[in-house]
Amino acid sequence: MSKSATRTIIGALAVLAMALGLAVPALGGGRPFSTELSGENEVPGSGSDATGTAHVTLNQGLEEVCVDIQSSGYEEGEVIVAGHIHAAPAGFNGDIVVNLQVTSPNHSICVDGDDDPNFPFDAELIKDIRQNPSDYYINLHSNLVPSGVIRGQLSK
Image (cartoon, rainbow, N blue to C red; front, side, top):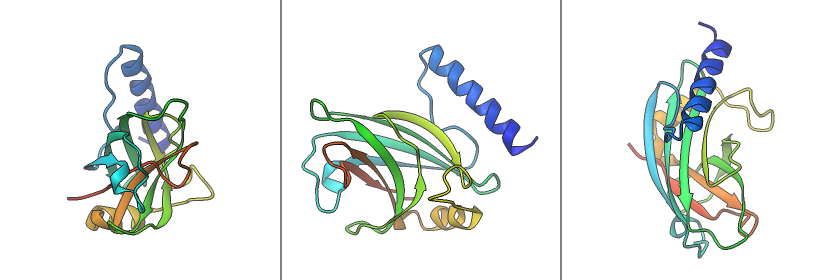
């Protein structure tokens, strides 16, 4: 089955699950990781009371990263505007390596290395994240805290 056909089927299943009101876990096959997201983990801390979880699945063969993010506790009027995987260990900020195309506090999506020309990635990056997850973190950015409102390091 082609990568395009697989993504179409996965997307259709996600839409069906959402229509039925089911929680949608990180979609796709591959190596799963999870992390707890909080404002305390941002560098420097964001001061936000928001918290969440991110479930990530890395599929090196498809060059695909899937994520299911569930978060809450934002300030009134705060809107999530972006979410990324960055390259840096705990205590440091790093460059964006995967644009997760996050647009809400609760978001499930699969992206591949060709989805965003500004942040392309390949199987080698997925392999490195899989082998060295603590060198990468997920964070969400908001209109009130554009530098990052909540963050969590990946771990084995």
